[in-house]
Length: 202
Picture (cartoon, rainbow, N blue to C red):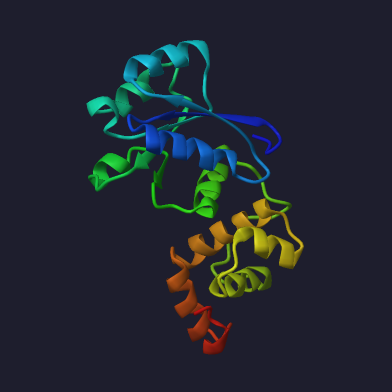
């Protein structure tokens, strides 16, 4: 999907606060046209899908007691819809593994943006997935920026890249290093002499 196209995202969550909050966050994602639509019951979800087909469904796995993901995926009308688990509490990992992606209520805007882009296959600006497990010089620059506490937007501005390119590079970095947190990247950067201790944001 091209990043210029509107992405329709249905949010199925019983809590009005979480539902409204998720909708507000999706509208703040930069450089993407997202049309969030809030759904508050299983019946409302079925009616909504009958009239509008979303590209993505963000759903609490315990929506209306229990959301039957297997039944949803087996339905020819909804099988193509990407499903994101909206995790607001501690849930069994085996339950979450069935979803295309998981968003936590504690995720920041950059993390949510990356997960939405990943599901929609929005390309970066000529960034090729590298087979090598070593970081490119550009990826090392981005690691340094992350360690210094910069956001994706700030990194994009500093390195004259689009935010989509930054996110793609960061996804490559995670894949190559299997490091999923800024703290882990900080240790990696210090051990590999990409930064000095004084460079690390306190």
